[in-house]
Length: 223
Image (cartoon, rainbow, N blue to C red; front, side):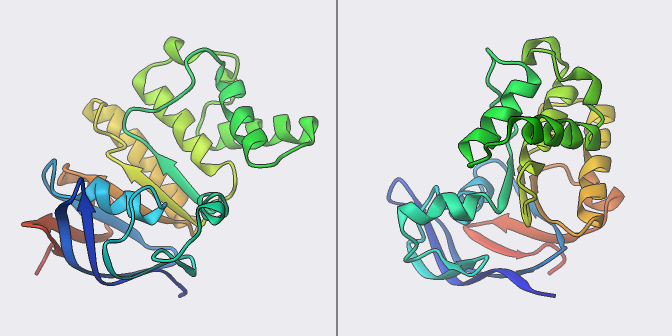
């Protein structure tokens, strides 16, 4: 399996404060990895370094063969097109329909053919069970439906890695399980998924590699 993320002795800062240190991690293609820990333990900060929203303070870091210490701002869009990001608070454009939300992303990432774009949007919406809701506005959808649209948005450019930051944090248990079913199906299709969560039930129901964030460090949860 190809190594997609390699961190060696990495230090991560937020507002001049050390959030994580001695971060050593290798993520191989197709893995499903849980980032476990309390709120404020550094999970989101770590994820931000993967897509270049937070710089590496020290150490060596590679993501999809990009050196995150030296990557130029102009290259970040190319990296981010190979990543899918799922936010807890959805970040959907509230003044546009589901279809328009997804078309907006395709236009922003260089798609031109309108017919092909519409066809592709329907394809990813079908993957997440939302193909009949493309005309709906975000406020007309339940939390679970909005998160399905967010997952569809993350899948638009056929990502190699999906970063899911507390994807079930705002959902009830039953809806959360439906979202986890969906993420597991995506993982089984060969896409690497990193899931930040404080829900210890998910790794038991949907097995994957566990990494615990505590005391400014990352370690195997079973260590």
